[in-house]
Image 1: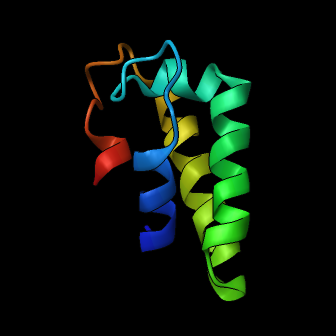
Image 2: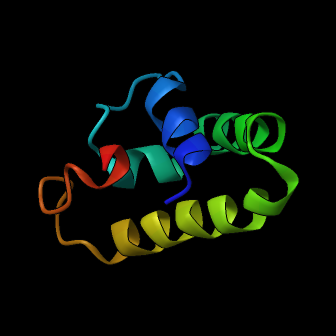
Length: 77
C-alpha cells in the first residue's frame, strides 16, 4: 500500500467506528469520502490510482469478512 494512503487511513477520523473495524469504516460514507479526499490531496499523482485500489481492496475484503475481528489490523499495515 502506498505510504500516503496508509497515512490517510490512519489519520482520518473513524467517527463512531472502531479503528480496526473495516466493515464499519467501509460502510461509512463520511469515512471513505474523507480518506478519498485525503488520498487526492496527499498522494502524488502517480500514486493516487494505486492508493484508491488499495482502499477498495480493503473494503472488498471487509465485506467478505465474517467479523470485524478477522482482519482487525488490515487498515494499519
